[in-house]
Image 1: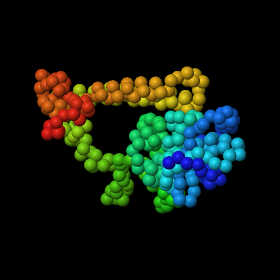
Image 2: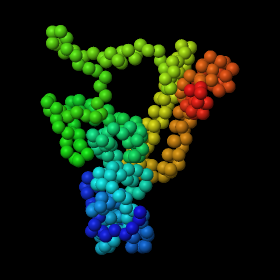
Image 3: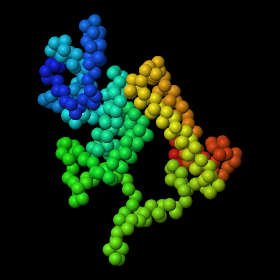
Length: 311
């Protein structure tokens, strides 16, 4: 809901402000405001007492410097923590671009939070406005750092999680597949999980859990080639976006909207060509199957539109 909010009732918290204020931007915005340019409302979360600003810090400071007492704001009900979460998505696609390193700091904050770290990498990437691969890279780096030094984890109330007897904290990012056991002599050693070993002996299965016929296994595994191209494409996009975040003048003429659209199209086209499962119509054996064109495998779209009774 949009409404006018008293400027002195808007709460500005350093933890919710994800990037430093740029005085050049302030000066430019003030000049535009004085010329009568209407800016979009700032974004705040109202907890019943305070209005927590999470997007529009430059506009807020402009209004303050201009001596205004009221501020146009879009108000949503919630808590200060809600405002913090929303702030992670601010300026990912509009407004004054984030400075270099801001997105990384946001992702690290999410990944060491006990609650937010449970979200999928894709969900985090979409919210922050970065690639899933970039989130995964930072997650791996945090895991490495934790294994050597330990990292604090913030509870939802902002209190650090208690430390273990060894002085390190548990980390929700942990993904070790190894377990420590004791020999009869009491000497510890490390072995791979028996469950994992058992799974490795099972016949390979496709994305929907069906056993892949032996004559199709090599072809199904070759889907990794497309995955590598998709990963390379994603890496290119991540590199371009890092230059844009850094306001690299070489990229100042780039149409970011067109680039994003073409990236999405090309990525979807490549992924659409990736074998997804054994053909549910012919079981991978019919050379004259019109559904898989004799390949024996279907892509994800073809599988999703197949009759339910065949799945």
